[in-house]
Length: 125
Image 1 (spheres, rainbow, N blue to C red):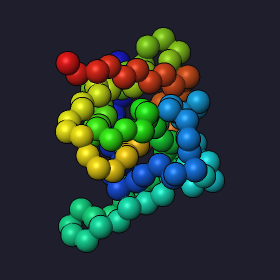
Image 2: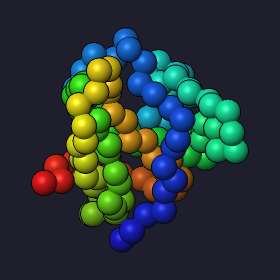
Image 3: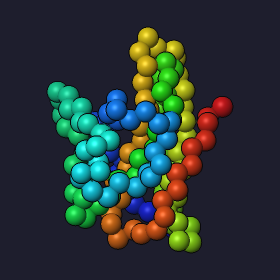
Image 4: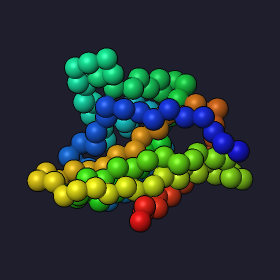
């Protein structure tokens, strides 16, 4: 039941998004994507943001509360469970920082994968 996906890199949540979680984690259009996210290109070989072709793909996004603690969301599985597409991820917390950040996990999935998207995060102890 495992589903192939690509982790999208070099994107961030716009500071106009104030909620702790996405009400709808499945983003299917460029317009909806652009309302929520910006790109953060950097110099170097892997500095460009992951390309997303909304004609063939959609995005599943997960976030947690803003925090001064380094927080990383790491995908553990994407599976088809009945009519649902379930993304599971772990939440890894690190050191306290001086800047507040909003963690983001974004994956790109082929549009042939259909169903209600559910995201489940669990804390790493």
